[in-house]
Length: 298
Image (cartoon, rainbow, N blue to C red; front, side, top):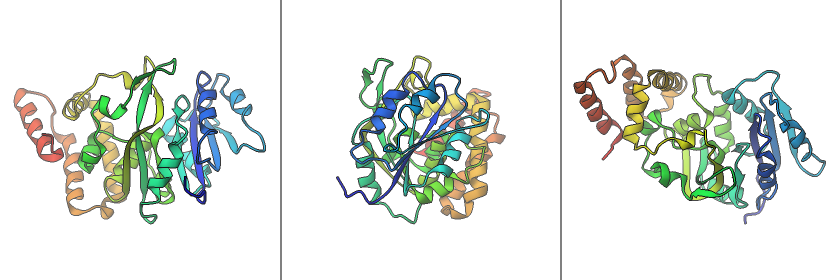
């Protein structure tokens, strides 16, 4: 374990998390590389979450609890969380997972190898568990066909490959999160766009989080290839429009920080909104060809 010189803030968003909140807080307090502080922002829970959190607060345990005045949703809440954090690094946290004891330790080891002047993120694989804490899939990445090292900026425009609760970010990345516009889909998708363009990342294929897959969770969706996920996205027009809006906001903020090829990819992607997707068989063939050319599907 490295000498503890760098301060880590754990940032947890909570909304009606009473069922598993205690287990998660216990796992945060059992980290081999202890967090300097645990910042919790409650998005107006109506259950017993606040009382559970208060049971963990003491002079010896650095847990700070805040609450939104009205329900704001995850994007606002995670951006607000970053503004409360005082650490050199920030680890995002969900309310219902379980962190393995070495999560912060191994993330910090890798983070220290990345340049501090660039926005950087370290993220890891996860193991899926059910509501009884039983592992149902040892590797989230293998189960969903996620290959971070083979992913490009173009890929990330279509689909996010970073799961927020597995991440550790540096101050430079935190500064970019503070700029995150409300066109962003989620904070971890915005982090991925930055990391795969002008930032830095390290992906670790070791699970560090037991990631809870509820019966109604998005993790219960059918396994899909990148190509299948793309076609499902464009067929669901409101969802695809969100990706276009996010890309336009990203372009407005960061186009001058991108390489020429990335700028061209971004122009291409935002221009897809003008194409009448999936209207006929010819269009499907054209889109399949364009996807192969753009994101390198083999």
